[in-house]
Image 1 (tube, rainbow, N blue to C red):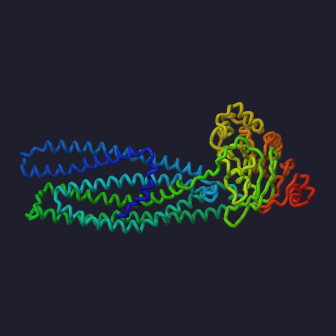
Image 2: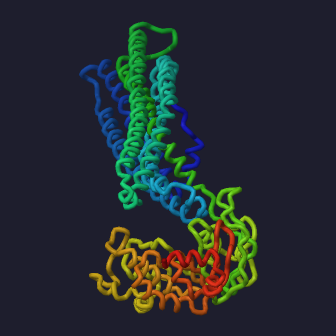
Image 3: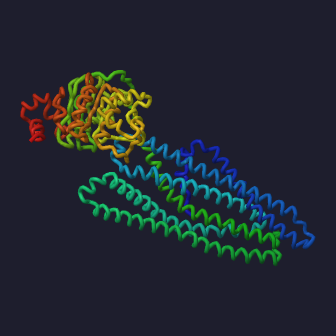
Length: 578
C-alpha cells in the first residue's frame, strides 16, 4: 500500500477552515459506527458457543437484543459519518474555489500574463472536483479503514492471540503487493492530470479565438492537434486505470491464501489441546474468521482508494500551488488625496530579463493635458499604461505623481484615481445598469442614465427589451461598438482624475467615433489624459504626442509640429490617409 502523503494532508488544513468541529464529530461517528457493527460477530460467536454448550436450553434473548442494538447504533452513526464527510467535502470545494479566486485576483498581473487561462479554469473546476471526490471522500474511506483495522485487531486478540499474530504477520504480504503496484501507477496519474490540463487549455483557446481560427481556415489543423492531445490523454488515462484495476485482484488473491491458513490452524486449535492456554471454541472460530475477513477488507479498500488519493493529491498540489502564489506586494505607504502633475524619469522595463521593451522613457510634468502615445505594434505603448497603473513596476526610473514616485503610493489609491477604457471591452453577466455601475455599485439610476447619455449609449440601451434592466453578458447580441459604449459609460460614471484610453475607439465605427468625440473631450477636460491610438485622426488635438519605436521616444510634440518635422509620425499619419 502506498504511503500516505502527510505533507499534502497538512496542506489540506487551510481548506478545512470552519469544519474542524465537524471533523471531530466525523471521527467520533466512524468509531462508534465501526465499533458497533464489529461487535455483532463477537456476540454472534458467543451465541453459537451457548447453543453448542446448552442446546435447546440456551437463552439467546440477551444476545439478540445486543446484536439488534449494535445494528441500529452502527446504522445511525454510519449515516451520520456519510453525511458529515459529504458536508465537509462540499465545504472544502467552496473554500478551495474561494481561495483560488482570491489568489487570482490578488496575485501579480505577471503571474496571469505568463500562464494559460485554460489551465486556471481547469484547476478551479476539474482539479477542485478531484479534491472532493478523490481526496476528501478517499480520506474518509481511509479513516474508516484504519478504525476498522484497529477495532478488528482488538476483537481478534481477545479471541485467539495466536491466530491474531498470524494475521498480523502475513498481512504485510498483501500490503507489499499493493504498494508495488501503486508506486508504479503513480506516474501515470500525474501524466493523466497533465495531459487533461493541456487538453482543456487547448479547447478553451480554440473557443475564445473561434473567429480567428475560421478566418484563417485553421479548423482542420486545430482538429488534428486536438485529436493528438485527446489521444495522449486517452493513453494516459488508460494506463492509469489499468494500473489501478490490477491492485484489487492481486491483493484479494493474497488474502484468500491467508484465510485458508487461518481455517487450518483454527480448526487444529479446536481439535487438539495446546499448551498455550488458549480456550477456543467453534463459535469463536466463526467470529474470528469474520474478523479476519474484516481485517483484510480494509486493506483492500485502502489499496483501492489510495489510487484515487494519488490522483487527487496531484490535483491538490496544482490547486495549492496557485493558492500559495505570492500576492501582489504593497510597497507604497503614502495616501493619494489628489492626482496632480504626472511625469516620468528614465524608465526602463523588461518582461524578460535582458530584453528591454521600454528604454529611458521620460515625460515632463503634465497636469490637465492630453498626452497621446503612438507608434507601431509592440513599441511599448500598452506597457507604459501597465506601469502607470502599477500592474508592473519599472526595472529602473519611475513615473511620478505630485513629484513622488508612484511606487510610494498605495496601488489601490492610484487605481481609484484612474479611469480606463481598453481596446477589448469587458461585459459581465448582469443588467446594463449593473454593468455601467460596476465601479460604483451605489450609483442611482439617474447617474447611470446620465453616464450612458454622455457616452452616446442611451439611444441603443433604450431600444433594448427591458432598457437598463436588460440582461447582457458574453453571450448577448451586443455589437463590439455597443459593448465599448457601455465601457465608456462605466468610466464616465466614476469621473476619474486621470483618464486612460487604450485603443478605446478601435472597435467603434466612424459614426459612433464621432459621437464619442464630444464625450471624450468632456471626460478629459481639465484632467491628465493618456491616449493610446493607432487611428491617428483621434489624437490630432492632443497637447503632446509621443512617438515610440522599439521602446524609445523618437519624436514628440503637437500634431502640427510633428507634421512639419516630416519624420516618422508624418509617415504614419500620411499612410492612414493615402
